[in-house]
Image (cartoon, rainbow, N blue to C red; front, top):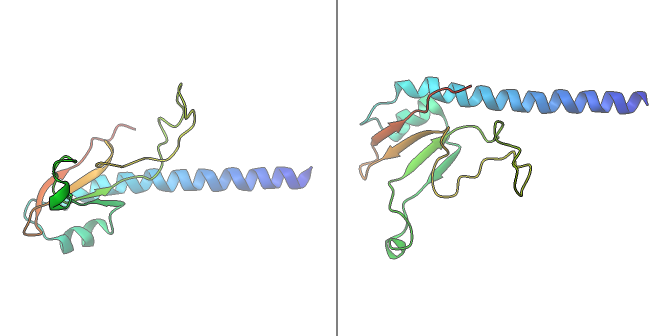
Amino acid sequence: MKHIFIFAAVLFVGIAGVVGLDILRGRSFRSRAQEIRVGDSRQHVEQVLGRPTIVFMPPPPGARGLVIIRPETWAYGSRLQIRDAFHARFPYFYPLRLRLFGPDDGDVAIEFDSNDKVSDVSIPAISD
């Protein structure tokens, strides 16, 4: 019985640590993104924010009619969906963020123009 309690405690502390680090990571992106300006280079963005959580590339020329045309966008944000992890419909529990067609609402999004310069910076308000 003692081993089960220790295992449960270690598991709880581990999960709490991962969730806490993920929340801090998202807040850190929002505060550091204040330094990014339109016209900055990719290198400057990577120096300030690090590697993006996910990169969205524009579709290839043949697929332009199938997908909304967007510029290359780097998204920075949490990997976990803490607030809306439980749903009334299937899947009832979904703790991961899906970013299929663009950044999540809570992500810092950096768009680049054809000259590899920042063309837009989107920083969400802190709602926690």
